[in-house]
Amino acid sequence: MLESCQNAQERWGGVHKLIDRWLEDRQELVRSYDALGAKPESLATDRESLQGFCRILVDYVSAGHFEVYEQLTSEAKAFNDQRGLELAETLYPRIEAITQFALAFNDRCDKGDCSDCTTVKAEFEKLGGLLHERFELEDCLIEVLHNAHKTQTAEA
Image (cartoon, rainbow, N blue to C red; front, top):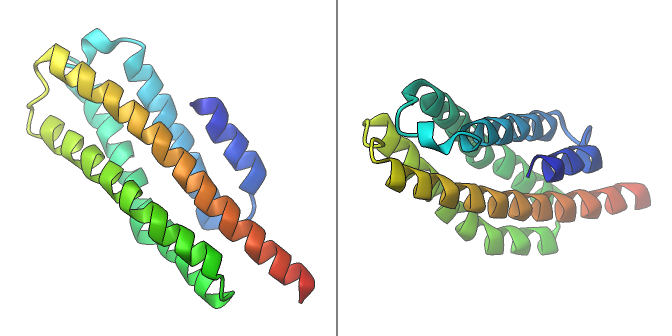
């Protein structure tokens, strides 16, 4: 998962400071996920590490919804990018569903309801798969919007 995050940063790094920072946050999220995943038996007992992961998780998904997606949509509108806007309309509901799962995981752990090792491990693994899917959806959205705008700017 970390390798695909590095590839995304290489492809779109410098496009926009907001996206750069967000992609760096994504790498931090993946590193935190991998660190916890390396010792899954501690998910239910290492509350401090789990809470640290959840903070990074919430920051990442919040930045996506309240900063990055808004910026990408604004750019698509500014460039009259119907393809990008249609793609966003198609992808946002799935991204939103993944966000809801991530926030529910955070809330559950925040309430201290992560003591059942088997359950929290299964949810953590499911969250990892959903995050991977989310990263691919986000990469698709960034690529389509960036490429469309890059082409339009070059033609202007």
